[in-house]
Length: 452
Image (cartoon, rainbow, N blue to C red; front, side, top):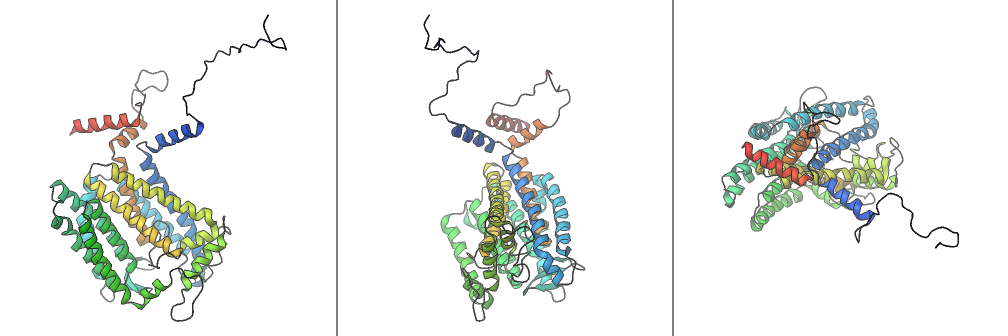
């Protein structure tokens, strides 16, 4: 009997399981990457990214507003929860607007474009009337609507420009007029310059920069040629340079880029320097929620423009990187929605909203880090301010609605809804999913084409 020294047979034992043959080059890392790639390519990925990241940013923003604003409220002889309650109320109203916008069809969004533009222009004109407009920190861009509540019409002007510009460009594309430069620029650029002029009358340079970014985003999505794009950019840059050099306050903000110590003289860069101090003292995991030192009067606008610095001090590098990751996920999802749609209005509107939120986040965070001049713009969905939160959450609702309108996303959502006559177990109903999301996308597209 053949065997080894122990007397046991050297033949492999029969386990009843077939031998698994792995293809050459297969490894766990590659399999994990493949699974992640498939999950990333699913039709509902953009929908969940937009909804999840925006809600997390808003909730974390409410928490940080409460932490950063308590000392400011007590200094003004107000309850410690004063700013928190106002921000929470604005978030509740914004959630209602988000849900309404996410359920509205594109036709209704397009119908709101012109009324919203006219309403924003009317309110911006009212701001410049003495006795109606209210000046805050030297900028007259507010309207008092009773009691402690104020409205900033320029924030709604961003949403109005996105909707109106997207509807205008979509109509011109349907008529094949965007091949002519005059149809691409008129009346989009004159209307945008009108909004910029009304905003600059109040001295709000930061909002004007965001509006300019939205205009460039719409022109880029419309396929503006390089020379045309460069021409508009040169004109806007020249006007911006003239406005900056004509204002000592704006020139002072430029001189504070990269400052790490307070300076003597008319420009002390106090806010920029203490923003860096707050970020530097946070370390990896921060000093703890509510344990900020800079919010005790050292850092101006701790709950609005510089709330990201307080986040870095209390939550550390981990907290700031988490906020950046959420904004990156939101921006990627917006680009994905704009890139995968065949509806021109959805492409322009989704691209405009994504440009708006991403550009504003970059300008705010860049100013806190000392890489950009302080423009006085809030961090979207995060900083204190109902006038900024309400239109931004409505814009997020637009992205959610556009993500749901994708044919494959509609099919995936329909499959998750219970159907009458389908048995839970052992039934004869056809509950099997398509073999791939691409197959489901093709079937949904063919079905929608047949309905048309």
